[in-house]
Image 1: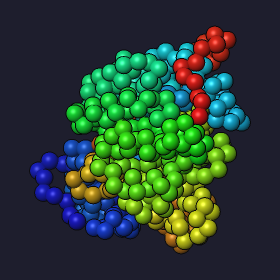
Image 2: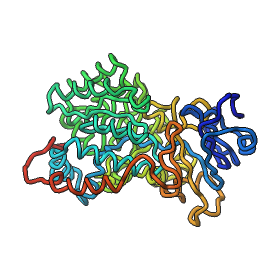
Image 3: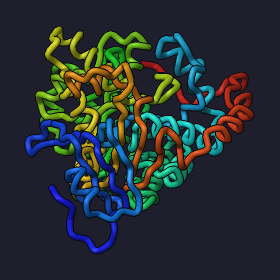
Image 4: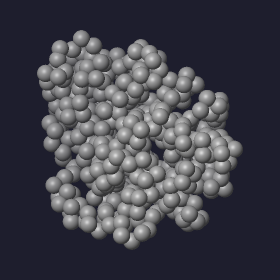
Length: 455
């Protein structure tokens, strides 16, 4: 591939790197001594370093020798503002975690708390090579403003429970319509009912109808763990996935968070779902909560369901490190399937790039470094002792490299972090203000909860 013939200089040229590429069968490979040419926020060409150096004018250049260029990572399910609650509820079963700590504290949330938590989360994700995230939470106007300001890409949804009445569902729709296509197209939106155990069948059916009417996807938790599935069967005679099918949610484009409670009987329903169906897996949290299973990645992949990588919120995961999710997904799948040949490093990289982009509805926009796609990419430094020597580059990236090896993060052609220096967020200022707000934010003496966890 060679640079296109433009009269004006390129906006950015990255030279000397090895680039992760996808072929026409979506297999990954690597091209060495390569240059990436960026114009108008998109990848203009992927060419040889020699060609780029020889005759191409550019407003900015990055020498990336010794580095690997990857598509920016996608965090397919998180709650960015919960970075403000990191470490608050530790070593607790799921029910106590929600009812005794998290949902009482969330009843204190102000828009400013959400802004600060989102800024902290975006800074963490940018430093870890995440360029896009999918989020559902409260006060999402504030999160949208943070995304617009810091330069990331995001799919955002205003979460709601049926206990809020019709107003909650209406607010979720209003948010989605108001912010769809915002931040120069970097923000997409979704309807965000919380979960089948907190949203009634009637509200789920109404949400499905709204999604179809307005061309919006749905992002929700479902079959998070096996206990939820067992409880749903006992109370309603249906698994959470069966609830999604009978309420029409599976007839929309839906992103299902977690799915560790998906059963064999659920798979045919997911396989014949009318909309684009995807699942987000966040394995670190499942280990921490001691859930007995994990997302059935192999079974889902066998029926054509993309599985994207995620972290969940930092209150449950303590981290927004998708790099760690990639390594854990590979390792846990090997153990669960009793097969060291699954999930391979190349498969893990495929989940982290193209499948994650597909999961959030952006497969034609990001997830690959290729002409015409948005220039969302990261540069990873492999010169450290923990990544040398390199016998298998895919294995080095998945199992030896760390998020701290990300040197540069770029979204829409804009450099958000360069040589580990954040350019769009002031972390010390965020931390100072957040520390002042913590006593009021973490107070539980009022006895309120935003919801009751009873599954």
